[in-house]
Amino acid sequence: MGTDSAARREDPSVAARPQDDTRRAPLRVNVVTIFPEFFAGPLGLSIPARARAAGAVEYRVVDLRDFTHDRHRSVDDYPYGGGPGMVMRPGPFFEAVEALGARAPVVLMSPRGQRFTQADAVRYAAGEELTLLCGHYKDVDQRVADHLATEERSLGDFVLSGGEPAALAIVDAVVRLLPGAMSDLDSAYGDSWYGGRELSGPSYTRPPAYRGHRVPDVLLSGDHARIAAWRDWEGQVLAARRDGRPDPVPPAKPGKRRRRPSAPPDAPPADPAAENAEAS
Image (cartoon, rainbow, N blue to C red; front, side):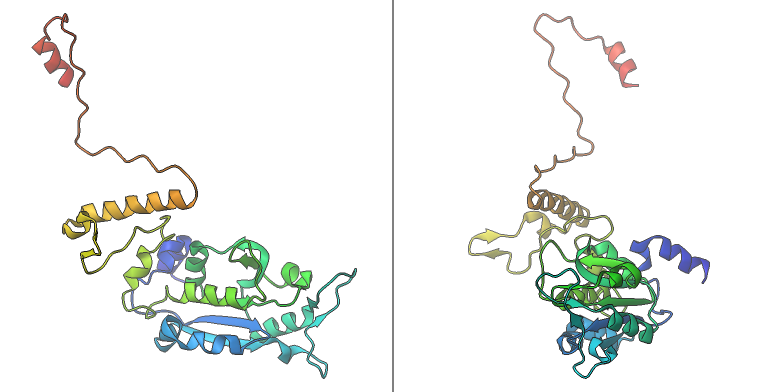
């Protein structure tokens, strides 16, 4: 691996952004699931399909039941220690990942996992392979988390019926960062959470006035520096309000000097020489 590639990998925000139109190979995305049909439609639409057509990604959706060894193709069993619900067996997961020859990261979708973020999407997009393991039923045998998966990821503090919706969300977040996935790739790098940003500022389009509600004048000004500053500031305000924090304090306008307090009526006249010395 060359020096340039190594430097890109040290900074995830640079790594995922294409430096040219060439890429070592498509990103291999493996999904292990008992519902492969869940992914057939979404991966054939919009940006995930466009990324594949551009040669930026290849998908391998694996049916976990292909790695069972009983006539019922069972992937689950009763939990040791008793209790409600069924637990997915470790064997099919291990065999599926081994058959794929998958390399890290191997990500188990789990409500116990760390919350998936834009930084994770950038990191995955900069890699060569990504494997997502979708659980179902009550739980997945802990040996999958401890000895097969390299990471556990969650979309948030809620429980889904299975890992498939979470895996699909992660795939979409990752592949949209790949070359060829979007007609205007720069759009992805102005999004919320990218490059240290919190939320992106609000967006407006035509008409300039609708039912008495006008587009902010700054966006019609043509002053790109002011527009960029406005968007950054509005994003900070929206992030603070969403998180229940006080609105941030606006920065002082550059070049605006504080007014000197006026002298009381009985103060002696100012000494011009002293003022000039102080100014120097």
